[in-house]
Image 1 (cartoon, one colour):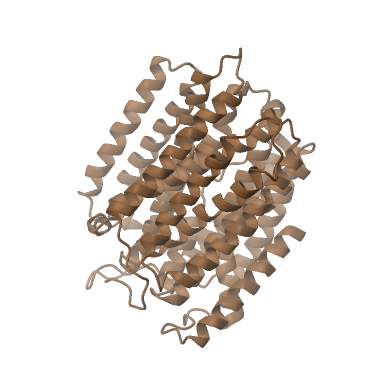
Image 2: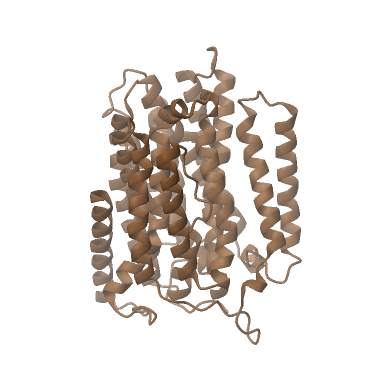
Length: 496
């Protein structure tokens, strides 16, 4: 609870400071009319941002307890990548659905319902010691509300940057929470349930009632009848089969059924592409794909975020827990600088997106992704934390926060108001699926390198995974530098 209060208070102060500076430079778009006061606006933004907060908290809980959870659940060590894979899979496929639902319904009740759902499943986790999974995640709902309320401009830049700040803050809170309760896993879920319950009350008070988005001129209001059920079913099935097949590959030594799952999953995703071109209202506005550089931006974002979260962070924590034999609480403390420098990164984005073209910020974020594995590759079991881990953790934190803020502002500013949630869900889906896929690929690489019996990734195996992470991060920076062009953020109206 103390951590939650500190996070909310810190975010509120940061928002007030940013908006105070914004008032001095005369933002064209002021406080949205849907929010009665500045205080209500700040609480609303914080509530919308807790989607990223809880994503990072639960992810950090799992990362620092990846060895403890496997033992508590009585699973073989080869199943540890599935702890991350299943979590990211549930988040990735759910936002595809919830993003469009948020555009077609009143997102207030979707947000409150999602928080209640998350509270309930964390309570179930208290009694079952089974990791809760967010079946109805609400990050894309938050993007829908923020995207519809805030027009492209400096205020929107500040708001989305503040949302991105919740990732490092949440990871810091979650790492400390998971490390402190590693010997009492039921309290990991119990404390998260309490935080979710508090945020549920805040969401009920702070989130305004928003009518469903309007369609094109003359089409009138949209409704749940316009939801793309076929596309949702195909995309969820395709993503699920692909991730499950990849994650099961290494533990089963790539038996035929894993290949079949991967092939069928990819076939369904190809079918999803053609279905979306045929339906009247696709999950993602087809005009988004025609935006110059958009495809390359998504490829770059997918590679960079996957290299960071799936191929570096998961195995960096494993390095501390197994190679350096540190307890979970110490591994958690090692990642606290990430929360601080990540928050600084969001301030940098908020202050520079209106000065520099966004692709420069995105390139810097991809280079930051590469610094994590670059600082961990020379390490040994005896390397002191302050020599390489500390600077590596500080610098890599600039990657996820700068990339999410820059990419989300660009994506949501290039689709009509009625597709804000769908556009936001695309980025969240990309980061979740890339994390799951790269964790599975990293596990396969590590298993092919290690020579020890049973499931045990030695230092050589971890280095091979980090080389893969480094190469992929640099490739994402190259793609962004050559093919992606994001103009400076500017004050303008929503697309029609």
